[in-house]
Amino acid sequence: MQQTRVGALPTESAPRLPVAIVTGFLGSGKTSLLNRLIAAPQLARSLVVINEFGAIGLDHLLIDTPDDNLLLLDNGCLCCINRGDLVETLHNTLRRWQAESPPAFDRIIIETSGLADPAPIIQSVVGDRKLSDRLRMQAVVTVVDCINAEQQLESHPESVKQVVVADLLLLSKIDLADADTVAAVRARITRLNAGAAIVGVDHSAAIMSVLTAPPAVSDVHAVGRWLGFSPAHAAPPRGTLPRTPADHLSAIQSVSLHLERPVYWNGLTLWLQMLPALKGDRLLRVKGLLNVEGRPVAVHIVHAVVHEPQVLERWPDDDHRSRLVFIGLDLQREELEAGLDVLSYAGSPVTAGFAVEPAAYAEFLNVATRMR
Image (cartoon, rainbow, N blue to C red):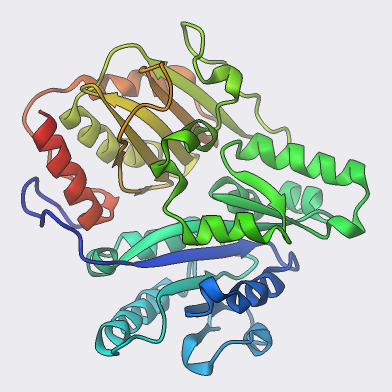
């Protein structure tokens, strides 16, 4: 893994292409959704990468977009066998984007196989130094089949991970399911990912907002929802927030913690470096709003991928304590709390050795340096 030293990176990021991932289990309706998306004027100039699992690829034949803006990866799943092909494809795409004047596309949309775990795909985008200098993760959109979701979430861990890492959850086949089934699916996926918006697959405005607007965490008014705190928890009572019960089928639960005292920039850098390595595959997602020497900083981790920490312009409410939400398998509260001690580290700047977007992280370090 590459090492990124404090002060060694440029102060400003070059323009980066947004990358969106459209995922969902087999038969959920991803291809139909994708066709509607690229028909919209805002997304008409998208380059579409489709991953099909099987000897004969068919889904790409159903996508109504110029052939030059459609790429098919059909010799394995992007999250495992085919990750190297995805990285190579993205490198070639960037070279084309930089060479064309004007370029034929202004964003990339990746449709995964229905069997894919999105986290390694995110890792492919942000973990490669050259790619992450020019690409940025926009959003993960997951389509949830209301008819089959309960059975899929019980039987297939991939479908659970597709829900957990989503920024937006889209309910499909609502018209084919009864109201009680839809309500049960909505409740189930809310337990798995309380911070994601949940709308019907035809809710165009919400989908376009997620795919074209800046990441929601950059909006101070959206931080509470992004963290998954209900309004009642926006200013939680003194003491540790309650642990969400484990989902009885998936064994995934969330643990919410807060810290009374501000943390340090160098401690945050060290904690972001250590946490994914220590928790491994048990840790599916971490979201937090931290008081870093008085400034509100949003952090986001998916598996071992650390997304760019963002310094917000102001606090979203009067509660300036640090708030963290951990989502994973068999998480132990005491172990997570003990790991927070490193946030108090105020010593020398720390070398970053984790999978984070380098250009974005450079800006974070520049802000951290100015704030010290």
